[in-house]
Image (cartoon, rainbow, N blue to C red; front, side, top):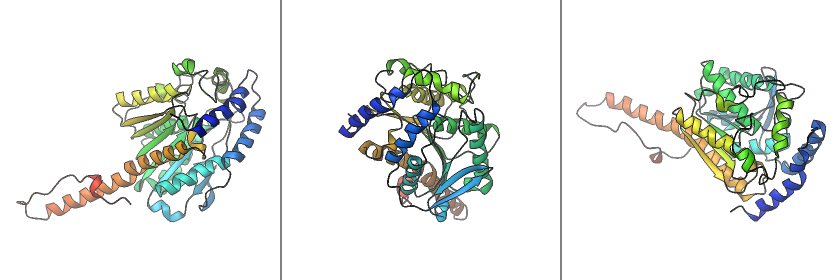
Length: 336
């Protein structure tokens, strides 16, 4: 069951956010609302070093001290229906993930619609990703994450990076990602009333802002319909009452069918991207789940592989009559 704070947050969102999504959407009004929301969600930023940078012409911000890059790098793509950005909210989220993972986190500020419609955002995200690859971040633990529209962009970036034969990250975490712009998931109907944040009108209006006139089944818009082969391990989070719930459920299924290591956690009664609501106990639990997944699939996995490789190399130099273990469990290694 959701906490009392989660129930109160759902009531607040239903009264303030869900009613915004009406025919004739005024993006300026929505941005004014998100600016006020950002002030609430991003209040009291985490005290971590921050460094504004630019990669391939795309502004971005590092969270965490430079030396954390030795442990690993996390590229985070923020949500906001491809039209909005809450810098304080996502700054706090990036700082929290840096603290929980011990990695340096890069928050990319891709171009927003409707001023910069598709494919501006996906091109910016791939350009930042490629710049990080050129910096050599894939030589160390490297992960990708995103929420909502940013989860969509993260999946599209993974598929484009694979097709371009770029090195892939160790794993990716997708928080309530939008994977199907056609809105064909059953939860779009059965959760239309239960969702405290979105309404069917919102789902209909967003494509007009982000990708007017485009084929919504294009995998660059709807990665659900793309090629999932060869992707790294994936973690999906979604709330049980979200209209976007089946975007995660069906995406995980597509990944599993393609032989990808993919898991999903459905959180009962929690709103879209509940992780950003810092006052919720479920937010802390959810972010810890994301951080644990990233560390286990990147930092610890690489440590285990390196240790096993060293043992194997040592065994070749020893007496052939002695048998040595070929695999080492991660449970035997200290957590970095």
